[in-house]
Amino acid sequence: MEPIDYEAEYEEIKRVLQEYGGELDYRTLNEILADKFEGIRLRLKTMKEKGFVEFDGVVPSFDSNIRLL
Image (tube, rainbow, N blue to C red; front, side, top):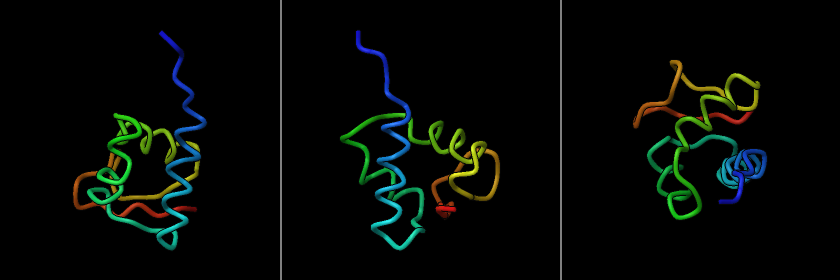
């Protein structure tokens, strides 16, 4: 089994957010990336800890807005 390239996944999330003006609701972001990888909620939690994105709470909910920093 190949190791997961988390950095590539973070870059893909950033790319999608940039395409949508730097902000997107979690539900839409999840739908866009669903065919590329699973576990976007945990990736976003880590990205928030690293200062890449912002959203309310510790992990995003379906009605959260994800903002690229």
